[in-house]
Length: 356
Image (cartoon, rainbow, N blue to C red):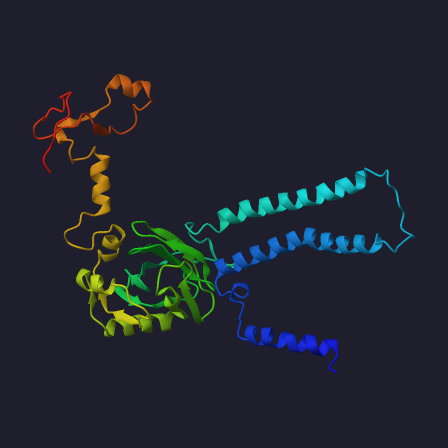
């Protein structure tokens, strides 16, 4: 009969086989932001283990020491208080909570994805005059579109960036919410239609890394993946030239075709891209017959030009502005009355039926 150790080893073989291909990329990242996030995970785990491990050990120790058969243990039915034990039980967790709170406060500001990078890594500052590489990211159903405004190119399901150059990602989505995630580079950032999120990051090592959506978004979610290439500057420049030599222009009409849901979309490259395409995607007005969200908001900021007439706009009188402390603020208008074609002054006390 095989020994118990042999049996345990045989039982562990499937788990070992499944984990053999794991690279634990979160624990061995290639970008400075991901490295700092890795360190945060490790430090937080160790701080919590300072409580968890002693509790587990003492639980087992108490269970063994005060077992029924141990008659040598001291039995004191009147015992009810120990100052030393109380200090240990409450003091140690309190110190851990304070340490975790300080760590969380510092890291929340330091690793804010909207905050421009302050360094390339722990030993190098960003050289003077270096501008970030801007990449406009659009989450489609079910593929990723990357627009490089500086280079004037666009790529589907492929991303590249030079090593040791800061990257500024501007992220949005075409329909449902997604999540942009390259574990080796930085943490995940949500992509939402009609909104722009940002991520600042840098890749410090050349290589090919996995990128994907970390938020379920429908039937093709599982295959919504892409390759991120970290390249030396010369190789990145050659990659840009290669993209420029193939593919056509990504304009609004072609984008509307690309926007249609599709699964397992192959890599496609566009040698040029319409300069205002990302802005139109963000403002939900790629189609020529749609008003852009920013235009709607500009109209609303001026008081609205729908049912309220432009002549019904008003502003606060000087006395009210002085009372509210707005003397130095810009004068803003608001809708003074509602009006219709039949009641242009908006003064009628009875409701007016307006034909649609």
